[in-house]
Length: 227
Image (cartoon, rainbow, N blue to C red):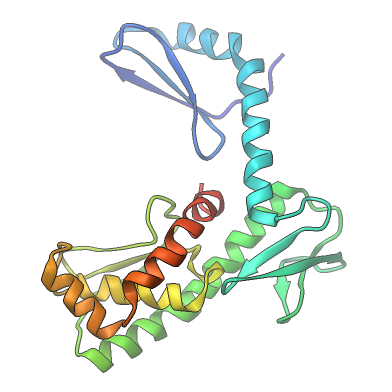
């Protein structure tokens, strides 16, 4: 008997079945159009043990990226790692020196609490930072959204709505400021042409250096925080 499996079936133009492990730990079954659900699930169950091993390895790598050390976990906030102390706390709290988490919590639950902490911090930090930079540089913008985004750190719509990954408070403040500046400049230029970069460098000096120093460093972490 297999445990309940989280999966999605995609009907494609493929001639053969394909099984993939998604970033959130669930399974994607790609099958030809007209292929029955029962046969697709039979394929999943037949390969489940092998895929479970792959999923366990992927989770271990993710948790090592998130917590640095699985025997003595730490969490990143504003670019610095802080140790996690386990005790009587019912939630994840932070006092500037330690994160406090419930005793005997699983890594999966700690990850979820960390995401909730970062989401709350993003909603606290980002609107004020956007407002400050926008007013200083005469930008106008629409609504601000904090989302579970792992494919990018932020985006700007044609309506000037700003979308930010909830992961941002984990990162260095200079990088957060760079992302906010980057998206605000997109309220003027939606592309990445010369005018865009000239304006970005004007309001955020050394923007290219900041991007090079931090973007690759944080790219793997954002995928682990926001699967």
